[in-house]
Image 1 (cartoon, rainbow, N blue to C red):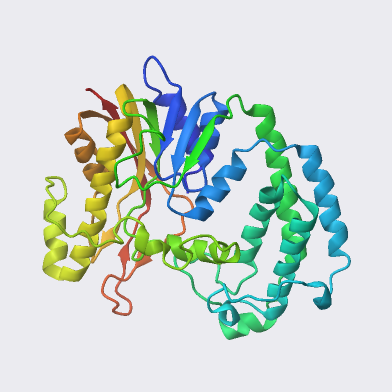
Image 2: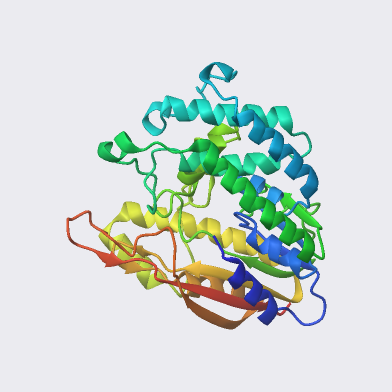
Length: 384
């Protein structure tokens, strides 16, 4: 995800001249850019195909009544004192795929009891508490921390793993209440609109009118979800818990999932694509499929930006079969084809990203290449 400090600095340093009232994030993720827009007095529009991302963004940008939250939280905490297996009403976990592989039955019961207490003790604020629960659903599972794909703990670790589900939930709610209070004090514009449209398709005018956006601030995927960071995998626990749509097939819906392998017209990365094609044609097709979708998205996003408006894309240059793909060059090239000029590209080292620093391009033991250690903030201005 984009960190707030980066979004804040971009909005400060690359605001367009004249009007700066509307921000668009076509890959909003957890809503960082939307929050930062609200803090600096801008309206914002965000979209994401991941229902969990939309849920997180909605809660983060809502000005809840903190006193009501505190009152309902105390009621939920009181309910935790009376937990027993028999008190859990909902015991059907069929919606959770491979549930015995990822969870102990005791953890599932405790998660279900939390859901029960949230429903019983919260009305208008149910989403606020479910957001904290969504984190616990993932962290209380047998997943290994720090991985770029979903992996299970080893048997030795599982044997001693006994997460305090209720304590985890309470800590996250307390943290979120602090964040809510700080947000309400600082926000100057709460006009935030959240959608689930696909930016690789024409953007609906009733969501974002053409040439209405002053600045686009986003961090798009660096490649298709299946072969880079497994976005759908990390969302799956929570998407399944809340029965959100597309919980099990999200990765196939994201960019590159549709296998659009039509020929790609590009000067900036043509040699890199040819190198990948010479090494592995299947991987070449996967890369081209993603880039075709990415290009389509850029064309649609470009249509929403006013003359003089800015776009700021935070991208990473991934390695495929030992070949680095300069997505920053490709991003600038595609926007230039849409009537933009390149202003600058800021290089930033990645201090903490859910991505291995080295990976194997050949699956040969011991043969490693560097992955993404830098992010590139590509800044463009629309000329016409």
